[in-house]
Length: 441
Image (cartoon, rainbow, N blue to C red):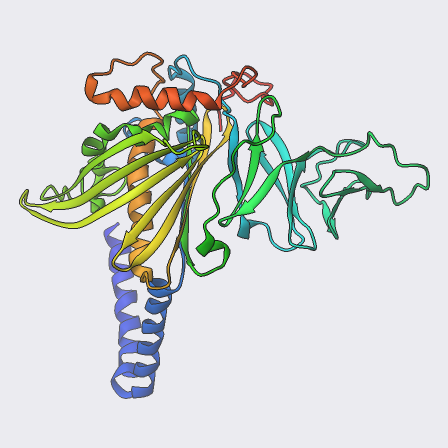
């Protein structure tokens, strides 16, 4: 190791010896490099949107994996799989509640493009027609079962099967063309189109166990629809838990001043941070309640107050945020600051019974400076990472021991139960799994 270090040091010294004269004698080069550095910093700070992705395996398994740090990724995955299989699941509610779910972000489906979507135990295909309208349907062609999302093409508003070229109309799913046949097209040979809508930078899917029609819709934000507000970035996570556990955190005010007290600089796993930053802490208070507005029983409101305390005396960076829970898997975090207004969308979509995709997408007014918006997204990503470490490893308590200070949790569970119905699926593993290791990844 010492030989390698010495060799590397010699290499660096040689490079510096060659480069230094350029900076000493060529003023133009110094200016060029300086401009390049400034432009690069400007791009990342003031232009490039925030983008962050983490898998569920990144949180909650650190202690168990310490003994396997020197082993391959395959070994580490096997360890995590064993822990998931041994985990006590608990007596769960139905795994897929009824409601609107974000299945794609709008910019993930380009003009006349096709993609496969696997959510809520469903195999789906999504495509964008020539008109710009997005369509969602069951993925398999009724002819011989080809997956329309794998190699399918768009023709006007239709999707074309990659196997034999059959075309199906977007709005209705009706078969419109068999390129090699002049016979009458059978009416039963159609694809099952799904109710969807696009707004706020997302494509939403309506899911209902009884196939009932929607009784409510995700609220459109006019400033986003009109493009008055600016897109600031996104983050995405995978979480290994039941969907109801995640929005329950909004009603669980008392966890905030335990899990989310350590300074943001300590990261998503404060116990593993190099610095303790114990002199800096976050202080939270809040109130959760169902909406009492007529026609909005599917909505709940969380008002949060936050500030940072230094040395237990100095308070600063006070912020009030309203989180509007819309249905089982959509939350709008509304910001109103001296720098401007904004909305951070928080969506939870079941990929399978005990695996959720969480996405954040942030829009603000143009006066909201970009570095501050990126800092908010980073802070949200760090804070939810702390929750994921717990969600990934906890069991669901059907009858938890709750003191009176946790009364909001009882109200939350009663409110959330409206999204389940008689036929809501209760299987705890993906119905497409045929092996016993249904929790493997």
